[in-house]
Length: 175
Image 1: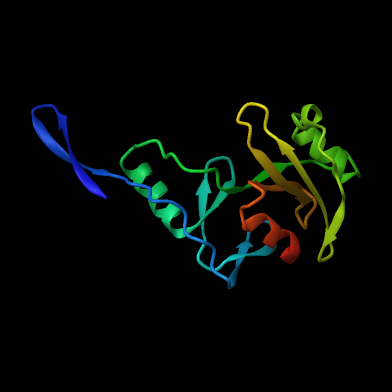
Image 2: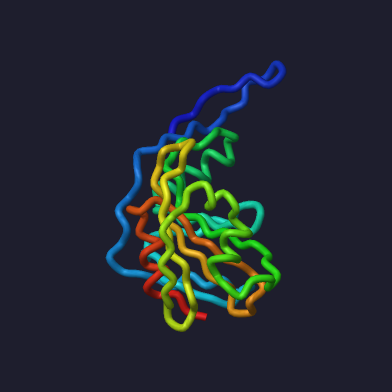
């Protein structure tokens, strides 16, 4: 990371310039990500970091991307990195007994994409995995939705199909 001079008023101010050199491969080992508020866990690559975002979202980044995003936030730069695997939490009163109907109500744009849904169980939690190609960005999205153990929240983890977090979560999700 280099330093750049910014002029604020009459005195120059040093600002950190963030440089992204690319993602670091996921570690072959894993560690447990625990969402304490909602009471579930899943495994992520041991070298990945969780970053809390607004609106109850959590992004999972490799170490180089995590550091770059942190630097970009501190220096008010707009990060130019691939999307992270992101965990979304939506309050979802139980109006539907079907996980598919609940997911479609909370994520109505899925009607447009018409992904193939194949409900499965991860541990003893019903999970709805699905994929679609985002029309605007053109990227492929792999997602999985499930209810929180207290049945009050719809949780969705989504990311690029090659992101290692989503498939790990799918095989290791536990209440």
